[in-house]
Image (cartoon, rainbow, N blue to C red):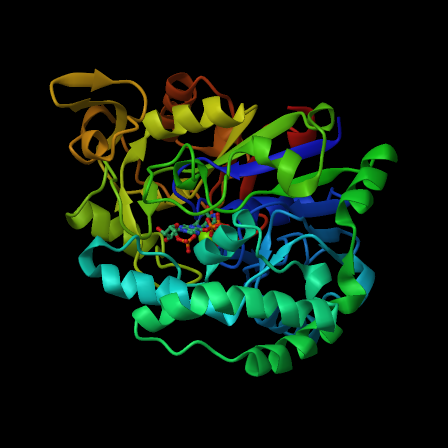
Length: 430
Ligand code: GDP
Ligand code: IMO
Ligand code: MG
């Protein structure tokens, strides 16, 4: 089956963008199916850096159709800016390269205001959201008062829908001391976005179905990651969408019989941005070194990412939840020069041993990782293009991750550049 789902296996920022861009050369379509511009995916090609927040990471390949599925939440001002930025650099010349589902929900200024006001009022109990309005937009979707792309294109319906949202959200914003924008202000801005985005909006589920029917190669690009999933992650320190592979069904309208392989992206260590439990976090000089060498600063908010050892409990759980057929292990180059390396194989908390991630936040917050030590290596890995090019200690590190997660490592990334990649197996044939 020529479809491949790519998902984050930790807390996000694993390098999904790099891997999608790498494979997109051999894909006809790349589709997103959840999340919004809380995502930040960095692509590096010939030294040139591109960060995409909404547009799928296949966009640098002119022959690859990029789809925003119905499950994505879209901030039209961010999308318009992203389109313009890419077009200025010679990408997305053909509007047909980008398809936006008409049922995707729209982020309004009230969503952004509410997200930020709530976080501010929570102070040291804040989730550390990206402040992009993602949570409030998904709330309005579930509450059946959301605005979809198709609704934004219909001026009279849009006005009624905005009134409905303002009636609910306006008083709440005032409680937080925020003045809600007026219907006129919102409509003046969004009518402009509607005209700019109209050519791209369509029934994307049909576009995807046609691609499947004609045997096209399709990549489904996940945003965020397993531990940020609203059901399966470290709730409540999660995002507001489901992020596991099964969501391709609801978020892009693809029936289960059409999806087969799933590639999980995992960093060779662990990072997390935002608040919440993180058992293998390192608040010492090793953590600082990972942050500095790995350039661990958020692509969306610029916040420093929290860094720690590889957590096999987390990745094993992600492998189970998304049925990973393989792991793409990224940023192996960043570990060069650290001796010894540690991998968490289990946790101990409250006198209990856990081989899985506990659901209770307090159990997880109190979890002490059970570590296994492995030899490090000193060599620069960025030139490695075959498994055999890696030092023996690095090979052992990878094999141990395969054993602990019961999943084969099928790609190794040794640098941010598209070509700094060791491909062990064709992802579509895993
Ligand atoms: P995503 O959200 O999963 O797409 O990941 P991000 O793009 O937010 O963060 C990953 C960061 O690591 C980006 O800056 C990438 O350019 C960079 N990166 C990806 N793979 C590698 C790698 O193998 N080595 C190094 N050194 N950097 C990498
Ligand atoms: P990519 O796709 C890392 C985190 C936020 C916060 C929590 C909720 O680049 O991997 P939200 O704004 O979604 O309500 O924030 O989720 N978060 C991410 N962390 N990478 C991301 O995306 C993230 N998207 C959201 O930091 O902890
Ligand atoms: Mg990111």
